[in-house]
Length: 370
Image 1 (cartoon, rainbow, N blue to C red):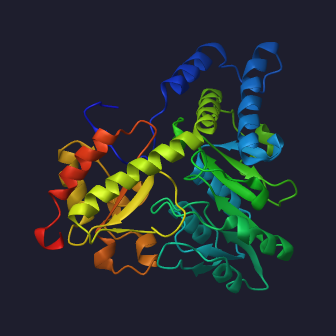
Image 2: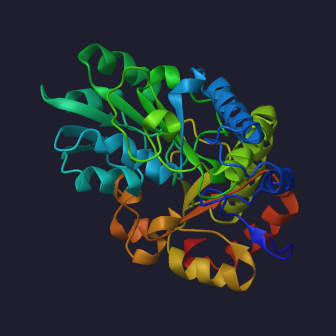
């Protein structure tokens, strides 16, 4: 990344760590054999797959054989939901578009459950939306736009007792806060949210869960997802996940402190700034700020000219020009939803960078709002 840029959009994607890049390069040079081949040289590729599967299984507290590699979180979400085509599904209204749109494409009958005004989906609201024919519930581990942690752990026992499948999109949370496969039936992961390569992810499927094969062909991934595996990317996923696991608590403390100071600086000059989900447990590095009178699209463009990169919400929906469905679901007016900036920091974000960003942002806020 250009060292002149101040990158504050880590929730959209992270840049692969140098150790990840080196490991992938070495794999490309020395272990690019097809893992399905019978000769011994392919054994190194199979070993790399086992190492990554084992690392993910340790972090999720699940058997390695329940983890299946995918091209990313979107594919994993689509795979899990396609198993419930035409069925009734209860889905949190703040879910990622890859959940909402795949459920519509699968012909599911959908009951959307809005969050409260802090962006938290209450378990009792999910349970009250269940019907006798409900087969699927989708609830994130953490929202990708506000960072608010969601109660999938608390919800799972009641759903399991009713035979309802709980799918958890953990793409934004995995590697940043502990997540557990013990409290769901399927869970999606992605490498590029934790300093790994793009185009690589995984789907956890609880043993016995009725999720059919996604792709048919050579029988890879226990005959559930055919296609020659991307071994270099899997190697990068392994290294990134290991690094994330090793420094998770250290990053948590550091990123929370940095964001707290950043928001405090802004509020010192503009007390009307609202931190969405402030009273809820959140991801350490994500803050959605409602800044009255400052349109997010104008702020993003102005900051971009200064080499400061932020967003107004999910990157996949940023080109629509419409307010985020997450902010609208939180009962913000369209006008307020258009004034939310998402600041997401990462492992290498510095206090000086955030200080510069705060000063630049304060210059954009209309005087009447300060």
